[in-house]
Image 1 (tube, helix red, strand yellow):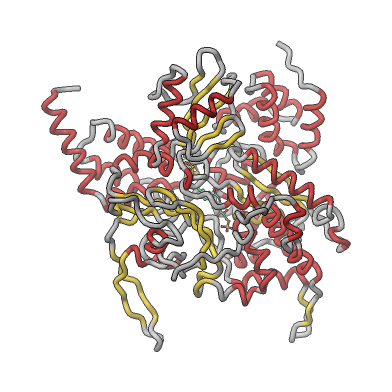
Image 2 (spheres, rainbow over the protein chains, first blue to last red; image 1 turned 180 degrees about the vertical axis):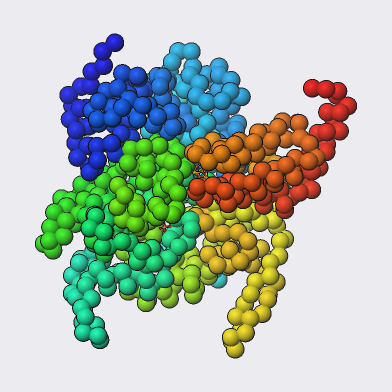
Length: 161
Length: 464
Ligand SMILES: Cc1cc2nc3c(=O)[nH]c(=O)nc-3n(C[C@H](O)[C@H](O)[C@H](O)COP(=O)(O)O)c2cc1C
Ligand code: SF4
Ligand code: FES
């Protein structure tokens, strides 16, 4: 499978490289941009980035496996991330996570990311999102939500078309 | 009456206050920068001249400002360690990774007043001859990263940033760099590795003190978001005036993140040491007390890595008398002034100034299991005691919360934790063992009772 990066995205990436005295520094920003565009980091993407930044593919691959935000497989169109950590747990994030899992026929006890059968939603627990005073908090793609009741959760899902 | 003192949060949440440059300028924005770069060399009594940069660094020292990121180290001292003779460029990094559980203060600044941070950063860069700086922001703040980029572009357009800043001949660039979900990127040397495009494996100190061998093996300053904002106010007020805020050795103001089981969780800015933990939890200007009908059980006073306090716990604190002699005063946990030194004297720390309150509805084993899972997930994996130990502790706690505890688990957990702390490359080793050591020590009866009950029940049920 060939891997092509659209010209506009490549221009954006070229600009990013100029932010650093050493090319390798741009790897995380590259991975973010590539994942945003393609939905995940494929083996081809890893090789492409390595080539572009004059690195070995392993130098890029080890980042994908280290940093929790990067994925090697596509996730749902809408990614729901519920904060699992203490303050949110005290505010009911366990029940919120379960509510989403039940809504999309997923296993609330399973570890890691799970995606609904139709590929529309993925649900996962993440660690503290730095909004502990308004728990339970969650993200749906780039949007951030506070004090999420089950009603509010359903509303958020309702807006995902 | 204990009250908030809003210095950093002065404009934040005020009606009509927006994060754009126009609004910031209407509120006196970038005046401190103008003041800083207009400073003229000063004649010293010994005939030498002191540069503008040295004057600012002296002022930051005089202010007594201590880092707001976690360790509470003197900012002026940190800056004085920078190797200025290496011939290599000096870098500055703003630590906007904010990921210590319980902490949500930097988020407010980044999202609601980004220019305040940028102004503080530019002044700090100017004072340290930095020409290239980075804002390392956690990956889970995509909106914050966009806002900061926009604010940087606005600042560049007005020549507060870029080449020949406001005609002074000083050049500076600041770029936003995004993390990707790893807590360890908050540790300054892990952050530097991550900024170099590698796994965030913390470096061993010595020799890798950032002030000497930091980013690209060059001298580097890493400061927290809030710390850099304070620098702006120090220039504004003068270091001596700033040092009168707060209490001796604990100067200035500080944003406290209050969460958990209180009526009004939120972020509250106080003069350091002028408000007690009890006031922060109970006073109507702050947390407003516990939920109705509840009793206090435990308080984590400085982010999840700080040692927990048990309700009713008393400490012997040394107090200076008027004649200079010291007396020991018995102080209840709730009466501890919220500052760096008092919390340390009480065996914990104010860390990232995040207070997590727990009432009598919580099961402390469940609470520790929650934190244990966090640390097991976030260990970077370089050091065996931390990588294995954090996982063992988490597994044991998981077992205890799933009906298979044993009476000796309390001692087992303490044993593992003791074998992690002090035996690792970075302070994560302490961060993951302190909660375990303090929770088990202070609530040992509950851990043992739970284990014993499980043992009794499971013995009746026969082998699993
Ligand atoms: C495990 C670990 C996590 C940390 N996380 C953060 C963080 O999220 N934000 C932060 O500012 N400092 C964090 N720190 C502290 C930094 O290493 C560093 O001391 C701080 O950014 C220095 O800034 P300051 O002197 O202005 O406080 C962390 C430290 C450790 C050991
Ligand atoms: S103490 Fe833990 S987090 Fe720190 S370097 Fe060692 S393994 Fe990594
Ligand atoms: S614990 Fe959920 S945001 Fe911090």
